Length: 340
Image (cartoon, rainbow, N blue to C red; front, side):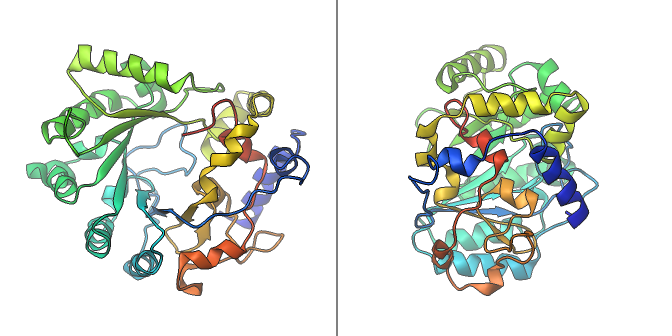
């Protein structure tokens, strides 16, 4: 993101008159939020995707060419090896499976840490791409490496999914889920985990996660014979493409007010940024994927320039000395029951 774009988007949120998230989350600074030992390493391996979803906070699309290089991937794997506290590797970014280093990262991570939980943030339709679906090669790879699938499916109805993600996406997503079930994912008694993610279609908070999971399971089983493990509800964070969507509809201020009104102090105890490190395709290091998309690198200056790269450290534990960067977009992680 350019400096001019960053300033423009920063100003757009500042002008909404939203209270300070840091002040609210720390009770005026009396209960500071401290970074913990890192447990989850998230790699955003690029912005190339076979979709261009309306809610996408990273603005991925088939036109984006940014991808993690082999040099950065190797350094990330070295940091994984040197940080024994990491229990989960979360691979995301566009359609991560389309990155040239995706399989290298998975295979090496599994070799370095056989007990590691490896997550693939799958959009489901990538499983139907000709380059990936041929002979079921991608599914076979994921299964052999015991990769947990966390798949985006914003609704169980065709109309809503196609509205948010593009025409024909729902049918291709269902085909992807059926293929995953056939490979053993999400089945009762299987250790191959398949989880789904729900995103609201507009300027509102997600419903109760447990109740929605029951409804998802009923609808997908009855209509398609599909099984899965768990459903996670994600609150849309008002940055980038989703913020632009709200701005065009004159709903940005109303949505920010909604998030602030529903601030839940209990959620601050389990914020993902407490023990997560997010690394971008170019090797810069961030508190979370949202700060990554806004260019707020760990250790950057007040103008959000500079910051830490994977080549500046030998272990992710070294990052504990830095404070977590909070801003008003963080209200998206603390509204209601929080964001899974």
